[in-house]
Image 1 (cartoon, rainbow over the protein chains, first blue to last red):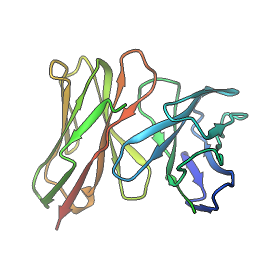
Image 2: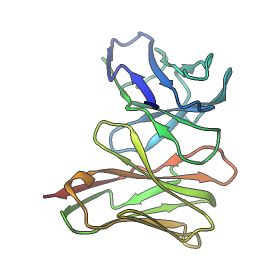
Image 3: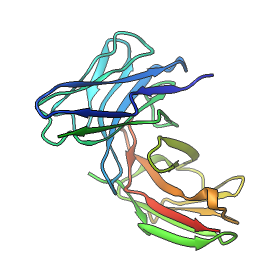
Length: 113
Length: 111
């Protein structure tokens, strides 16, 4: 059963702690993306990767970091430098870096108090 | 910055009625896509229309694209309660290999 998985679904952290969100895909896609969604707003691009060991900053990369050591995995770390980390985080992938269809995971809701 | 903006922000209709959502954008595009999001879930791709296409159909969905007005519309015919969701348009500013999403239209279909 192919797709994108994100874990956990809900995550709670104390302010000042770093937290890593998992994203795994078995679609054999080269490109992967991380988005942030706030209530009543569209998705904003945090980071994207077009191939293993390569990633680029999106529109709101400050306070976040990523790695792409394996094709299947693109974890996102929300660092303590992110001023307002509470949000819904969505991971997506596509066969290659392009403007065609993206496939989304179910999302992780992060709450930082 | 927002490239695509959906209108209306919220839409409430009865089952069986048609639902129309609009998307306006600012710069030239390669394609425009519509996605659906059920509450608290990931996005699901519905349809992609390329800049040289004017209309596209998929089941009960009909999408139009007017590049001269920089706008698109999504029509859902004979709506069902299960169509209740948020609908987002996504565009790519010319030359960029990434998508920019609007804030979405929240559709509620009442039985």
